[in-house]
Image 1: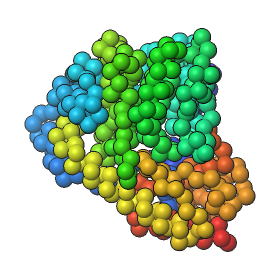
Image 2: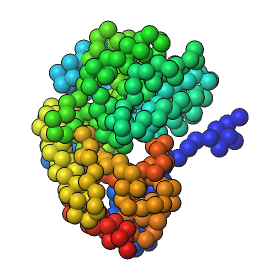
Image 3: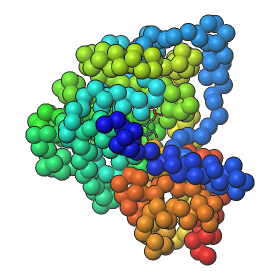
Image 4: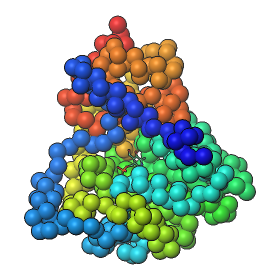
Amino acid sequence: MSLFQQGQVEASATVLINSLAQEKIAAGFPIHNLSVGEPLLPMHPQLIQAATHAMQNGKIYYPPVAGVTQLRQLACEWMNRRYQCDYAIKNSLVVNGGKLGIYLTLQYLLKADDEVIIAAPYWVSYPALVKLFKGKPIILETDKQQQWKLSPQQLKSACTNKTRMLILNNAANPTGVIYSKAELEALLAIAKEQQLIVLSDEVYSELTYDHHTFVSCGAFSEYRDRVIVIQSCSKNFAMTGWRVGFVFADEVLIQALTALVGQSTSGVTTVSQHVGIAAFEMADELSAWVRQEMLQRRDAMLDSFKQHFNVQPSPPPSALYFFMAIRDLGVSELSSLAFCRSLIEHAGVACVPGLAFGCEEYVRMSFGLGVEEIRKAVKQLGKFLAG
Ligand code: PLP
């Protein structure tokens, strides 16, 4: 049966809410869009220059399928320097955003009924993609009391002889959770004992705040053969629209995924890859800029919550989101979807329902947009919910 006949591909709920917001905007309603999943910053002047230079210098033809060598080299050097990994070019693949990296990895590795462990709240696409490739998502609930972290005991007790993979999101969307070195080591030890592959989605690695530091699963040499790291320029360098992401893994897997790229996208747009090269050439400066901007926005949102609500949400240690209990906003409506619909309809504020992340009774609000917009949105929310 085709996917069309099965009606089986789930649209991402974040994309759905964003589209609803865009429709309202197009119809002339002012919408404050807290559903965005990206750091909305202007393109850095050096990246504009790199794009122009690439086009003027003939970087407009098909790219090498696995990616422009210089970009792969720079991305590996960055992983090795920033996160103490040990990747060589042959361990890297350039893909159209981290999302395609996850898609291709699951497409290649899963067979029917393979179980894939995912901690909830999860990024919306994980269960949908696992199901797309006939796998079975095994959702393990985490809660605020356990800091939204999957524990080694939880992982171990969920494993069966069908468990093939753990998808780990560190730093995480929507909770902002960051795992420590010891926590990762404990999870990886269980993964090894249970012979699991670990797909570590690390696309927010540079967006960590305060004293929090990021540790990559790629840094543990004894687990290297079972760890696949997904990276991206999207969030770390504010380059979402350029679609430059990476898979770092064992050479054999990279070759297999390269063949899939060769039969699908033929690689990432050549100009984008040259913008990616420029980004890695100034990686520390660029990510420090994005981090600083996002930190200011996070704190502006925190400040606005203090001003307009009687709550003080804990500041997320990473990523771009406040993940809040609807109850903490003084609301008794506990269906997150109904709550978010009514916010768009009546308050003109778009948020993402917790349901999309496998966590009802919560709502995700992004601080990826500008400070003024954030302040207006939270004020508007406060006005509506008070009224
Ligand atoms: N992983 C997580 C956790 C995300 O939140 C996103 C995007 O929102 C992605 C992966 C995909 O990012 P991209 O495909 O832009 O690299």
